[in-house]
Image (tube, rainbow, N blue to C red):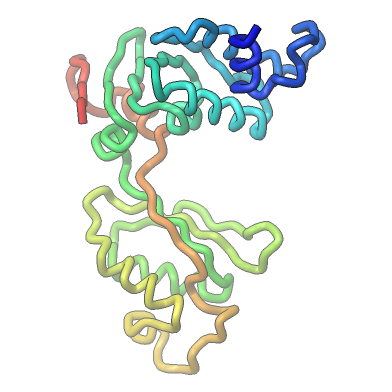
Length: 236
């Protein structure tokens, strides 16, 4: 009984141990299945699509449980969700055409097979053209992928695709400086004028990330690279 209560508390079902499984919600039943797999403290656990069909909030709750459970055991998880693989896995194996094509950490796979970087910038709509010019000045091969309004805000978010070996230091320095006022490069692009008010500044927030694991999967699945059929391993 103590073991059951301990595992039930671990998967956040401690208040439902007397209920029939059929009376539980979908998210609770999924956590119950996870609890059953952990009874007896096994050293190896297999999970197949553990969060399929769950709402985002419940899904993230299950991910937190998996993340805590994997600390003292090996867990093998199969999933079609690259978001899930990115969230809970320490090492990812990608299958295509019935074979494992690559194995490695997320960082290794993104740097090896990703299309490059994604630069996300929150900015005032009236400064969008200046931001485009700033990115092009530093990285001519940079491309605007999307631009949309930020909910409950007057700002916009622009997403740029940057090649993998882009010289980022100059661009990042300019973005940091822009939060305190116009950069010298921007003044060259736009001409001399009054310093913009804080609410109209070109950069409010930004972050830089590798390509998503979804993009990596698509590149591997379509065999863009590597050119042969060998499995690529990384033990970083």
